[in-house]
Image (cartoon, rainbow, N blue to C red; front, side, top):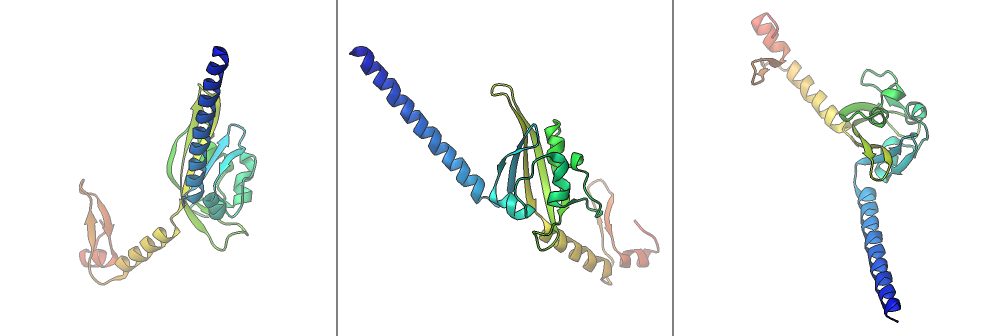
Length: 187
């Protein structure tokens, strides 16, 4: 009878631990789905194991298997407009062990209405304790930020007031057309 009581206590503790684990898993899934940042996780074979709602919205397409298929299916382009080589994409690089922070790339495919400029970061996942290998990728839309920056730079370049800006090391980071005309030289 004592063994049965002990077994019942272990089973109860196990049930409580499983309930807590399920609660934590549900919380994590809710966070992943409610955040406005694209979050994907790919295993070592380039198959997605996590692909949240924001990732689907930003890419216009759900999970695509195989690194070589990512550029054509998602419509990944470099800042200069050329197709982004699939093996150089941040997530592909992270699958090879490299960390990438703030890489910029355009997404354009038939499922989205316009070019979307993304800031992308990716990092390898290598947990020897669980034998889990893969990579995590986070990305968000910076299209509006880039458009605002370009508009501001255009205004500064075209106003009739000389504007120059120097960083802490004495390097010019801005020298507009009026400043060049006034001084007769560039920075």
